[in-house]
Amino acid sequence: MKTYVWALYASLLLYSCGANSTNRQDNKEDASTEQTQKAKKKQGLVTLDVTKDYPEKKIVLQDLADVKYIPLETKKNALLTNSTAMLGYVSDSLIVARTSDNEIVLFNGDGSVRSSFRHVGQGSKEYQYIIGMAVDPKAQEIFIVDYLLKYRMQVYSFTGQYKRTLPIPYKMILNSLQDFSADCLLACDMDVNQGISNRAKPYMLLSKKTGEIVKELDIHFTKRMSNRMSKPFGENQTISAALGYDPIVRCEDSYVIGDLSADTIYTYTPQGVLSPMLVRTPPVLSMETPKVLLPDYRAGSYFFFYLVDFEFDFETRTGFPDKYMVYDYAAGKTYVCKLVNRDCEEQEIQLGDGGVTNKAWNTACYTIPSSMLIEQSEAGKVHGPLKEIAAGRTDDDNPVLAIVRFKN
Image (cartoon, rainbow, N blue to C red; front, side, top):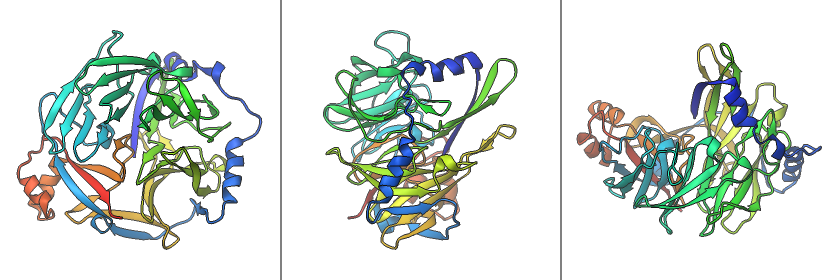
């Protein structure tokens, strides 16, 4: 999982997180608990105790999936980090990524750079900073969620041509955004202030043409955790640490939705059917130190997820310790998961690693740092097609992208 630490003036922090308090929903009942109780009554629904100790299970990726490696081309305007968080879209024929300098880079399926653009600025057709991104491969459009206080999305073509601006309604914070249909984006409002969600129903479909809310999903909260922890720091300042995660994950044939505050994990189909998939216990908001369950990927009989202790030490700037887990539906058992790649012995894998990547159906991905690949290859621990790729890389090259397609 990703952790972000930063210091802000208190006034700016309060404004960015609380400016929309007049739009907040204030119901009397704890709706999320009521949903959980209803979900538990569903026949055959899995209940998982997050306080138990579970045995370890080693899973070899190639036993579940076919793996394709794409060495991403290294160019001056296309320098990427080793995190999947920089990936905006991944398929066999197209990869869309963003650099730390807010440049959008499109790669072909062989990893070569197709094109790039950077429209950073204060203008009406520019963006100040990329908060989130979604890619519509059919319409060849890229949706960029602009800097927090702009409350807008900028839409560009694959060649970087400006197409339109979509206002974000109700001053929502849309870190999580997915291409859903020809007309809609699937989005989550991540804005939480003092335990109250900006929207009682924060998961929704947004119009690609206007940005308006088309439909709210029936996942609702009255009490909701923020992904951020804060404490006073110096005079008139606050230091904050944020747990980076994506509550919406596109999997085999449906989306998996798992909110930080939710006791139920859901699936949501392209046809608009929302169904409970798994219920955690005890309720997350009942725990003194919450242990949160965050989805990573569902494939076949396996559901991969993280268990994260929601705590952070600001003195050492370390925290949010996590375990990578898997629930085996066929066996009806939960394990601490050690997911490994037969071609690269020493790299333990998380299929999403907390990134916010839009992917083709039945596709997961992760990155292999070129420096690590070279080191492991020289140690004789890299095999198959990866060994040949390693021979042509340097330590400073872009990472190698592993695209994972699960077997039926």
